[in-house]
Image 1: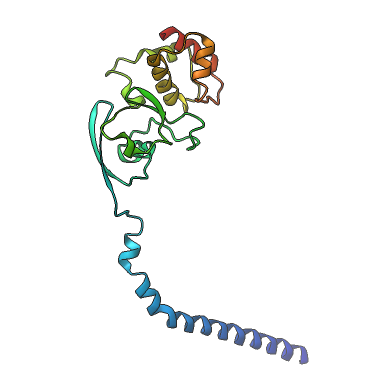
Image 2: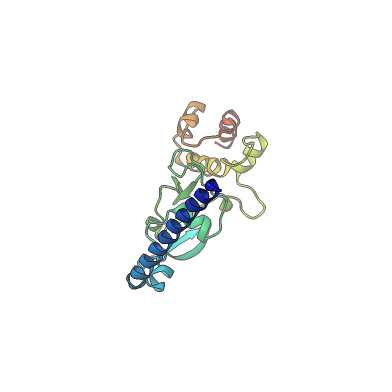
Length: 203
């Protein structure tokens, strides 16, 4: 009986402490609610993620004129994938180290994850979707297929754009040159030998 009374007493103390704690929190909430309501209005919450300083971007993508209103901090990669719905350009490391995001800007290969879209004003951007002419593959695309220069395919869009840019630059003369100048494009499947062979054939 004594034990039951002690247990009941402990339960009542615990319950009273919990009740007092809850009432304290409730009181604090009521006291600060007006301050919070005035500091953070519904409009502030609704528009918190919408930047007020959008810029107008006009450029050519795969031969088509595009106009976007974007945050100046948006990368070319995100503009292509999320605003123009061109998923061929891949987001790999997002640090310019893997080359999966390589596209051509005015014929030069760039890492689109490190390129601000705002810097491409009136530029001509080519992604992997724009390499072929209708049903006719670009010679580099055809060579990649012929020489089995890809496996999983994730890095392939960047590899293709980089290869097209490399050939147009005209700096590579040997297989060693190709390996060096394509070193920024990583193939995790290890299809490097076939990639070099495909590029050599087109060259």
